[in-house]
Length: 247
Image (cartoon, rainbow, N blue to C red):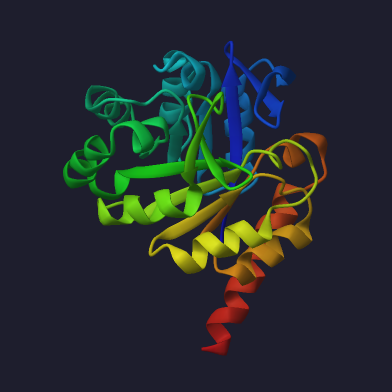
């Protein structure tokens, strides 16, 4: 299982929100580039970026910071937040972002997702953000009547190979992941699932790996010290070696 540190960007700074609430933010660092480089130096093999301003506005707003991170770190980066058209996808891939995460357009413009998957393949992934099992869009500010599982199945039919599932009520809370809904996605959707939201202890990572997720995104717990990234990566590596030996 891949462990992916998150760098959430708002106003050019590295912040974390509580349950996606823009009014409840904590600024952890003024320099997101330095944070991404630190996670890379500790062994991260991928960095997860979120443009929070972009998610709310509907267009990428922190492009300079994003490009600086994508150019300076040697590991691949993936980005979500405000990516809602093909031109933006092309631009981001051109500045060395390796994966783009589509959220709102997955609900509002599914045919666009189909076209982008056909054009860019696995560089396109979908983020499904759910509150009580129901999808939320536009920076988690707008609720829908669509079930997360139904959206996941629809996205697979359109060509999506990888989905990030985030439980909004758990995100930034330092509680624990919503194992039941994550398991439902893993078992019910024929795509690689990356879990996010509530990961705040090493045992959470162990449980997620047993559920069969491809990866886990860790955010606030890294900044508060609840999870030590080096220990988490070593744990994941040991588990991987054990699994290989068992085959």
